[in-house]
Image (cartoon, rainbow, N blue to C red):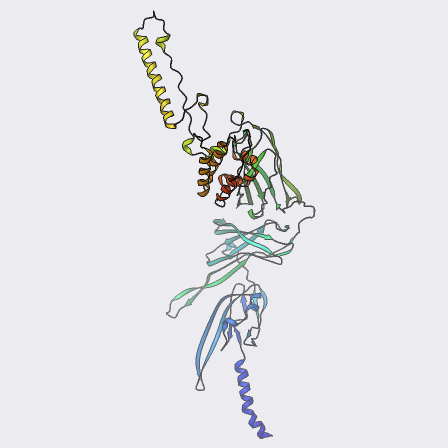
Length: 571
């Protein structure tokens, strides 16, 4: 029996040595620290990859400020051995008795450590210390109501490597964003000059419930008043870490009230609607620009609603992309500007209905409406009491838009009208000379204009702007021009050629909208031309579809009339 135990003893000793070598250990440099001080925490991890160690358990009560790995080699009993150590710098997140939990290392557990963090009385700013103050714009918010968190730092002495940590939200889902720029200025407090730093954040709760706000913190280093001696015998001023926090907050976020009936939830301090006009006169077919402005106090620009414009008979409305802006000084103010182009399509009294935007007054805790009052205007007739076909004018080449020179009147022969017995004195001779010279200049100018334009002009049209081509092509010529414009994908030239083709067949047509009414089969292609000519960008126009649609079209006979102005098209 004794012999058997003696034989098993080496095996038991070997197993014990393996167990001892496999055990992992952890160490701390001290068990009691002041608030703001750090702890050196080390882990023996021979043969273990430090990246595979899970340190998440430490982050509940500690902040890992630094991480390093140290390796050493030594000889024991004639054998070379290596050891590795992971060193962490931990900063306690709160005061009191804290527990550094055990950490799993290669299927083994380190021991836990109990430490005590003593609260340190911080000097006020006027005493050469630091203070962090915080305030909220509302402590009883509604869901999605932006809360302004403003932090004020009072710095009474020099601080190094200082940083300001943003507040954080927990408990419910909330968005925390910086607001505005940091402000810094000097101030005298109880006879001491201090530095004041102001920084704001906007916290927007996304759901109702309890919202916990972890306060902002000032972290930095200051001189400790002691000196350290380096290996070369030089003395340096020792530094110590300081950490000052503002007070925490716990808020109850209320849900959307049941009495709110608006489509978009707008919890704000104030909402206002206003408008401005490019001009205050309305003329048939002429565009008027209207700018509607929505101003909201206590909302971010992302929360502003879309403005819905009611349809109005007798006017076409084209809204541009809204422009939003947001700024913060003493309060958060956001604006939305919507530019609308209105084109009246009939003469008479026109009423633009009122616009209403419902919102919730967070101060009075009740529903309100921002109202833009209805506007009544009178639309006057266009040029000469009729509407000018603007699209045809836009389609003409610049050189065709010229004023017709007035045709010279028939010269008067003063000598022939004078009595035969009347003698021509010197004054009469000079008068007749200058009169003939003036008449000759007028006739020469008129002949020059006629020769340049290569076609006769009628005196009845003098002074009227030219809106049609000077020469009327035949049907075949107009078709060739239309085919060429469609092949080249030239929308402007296609508009001109299409009107020339219609008029060459004896059908009077003032503009393309009238042609679309005469030939419904051409309506889709005419709409495409309008969109390309008057729209805001978009897909390049292709003329193949228009050319295919024109072939085989038989135009009906129709008298010209003043139809509605061709509309502008939005893309």
